[in-house]
Length: 404
Image 1 (cartoon, helix red, strand yellow):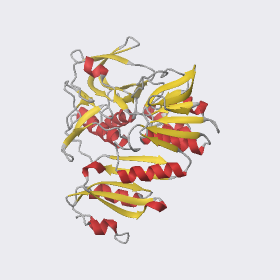
Image 2 (cartoon, one colour; image 1 turned 180 degrees about the vertical axis):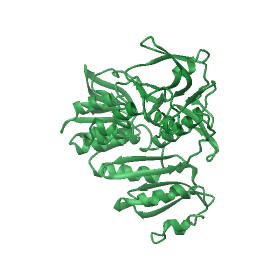
Image 3 (cartoon, rainbow, N blue to C red; image 1 turned 135 degrees about the vertical axis):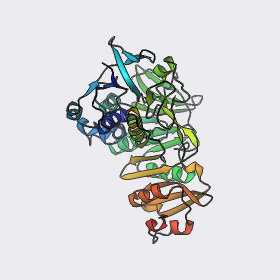
């Protein structure tokens, strides 16, 4: 008997299964994931789970009982090896052939690998799954030397946890500033100073060319060997590659992700996709993009589930993200690079502020640090014309700027 089949077991997969039931679908639902876990949240892995604040149960998207109660089959530790869009089946590495009425690809992404001399030494870690973090935690101990390759959000979140755990931490970023690809010079400088003030050593324009060691990593070499950083443990965080291989092999259109329309439909009939693996259109931003974002994965999953059930739901959301570093919560909406004017509200030195980004007088993005109220209003203000002076004035109630 055919079913609704979901390939992948991350945020998008877990939400899609729940949404299918909410949409009234009462047939068979099968989630197939290659990890030995039911769907879980990835953001806490580099923060609360790494620090030990959260155990495994708190990381799961929903408890195991949920899937039993909703009659959802979750196949863990099983990898889909092929999709036959004509026969409407997926084949697994267990030699199973599972038929589907509708198929959702929620295959996510995997860490970009650094294939340089010494890359296979023990003690070099990537952070994507629970087992990755378990391996990192096993090697973390006060006084040990950690080198983080890559000054993006994941690398900085790990650096924050590690330095607070008593490790000596060096962050190596090949660009001219940390977070260069995702934020402005002002915010890069703010986070650079923040981490340095907490004891993290940040090195920019540091291109890693080799790892040194005998069996286990002992050092990280930059450039022509002119810089070397001793290391007991290395974390590599240089981006994510979308998992599109099984879609490509099935003849489904892919281009920096699995190409979908605003209904989350792929080029193959009755095959949908959601989450980090998708390249999707955003009518609000007037462009296609691929996002590595939990809110995007969850919303796409809801849209896909509705349309898998015969609905006509469109995906159109302004992207938003967050990052926890130390006691600070950064919340972001939109893309700061779209703005031509920056407006600061609050006190950056006091670690409680918001930076608004305007283009032609309209709010296009915002970064808020420990300012949840400003962030919530900003999400509603995006796209609206706003007065820069009113935004900057802490006495202004931002809600009064919302157009009714």
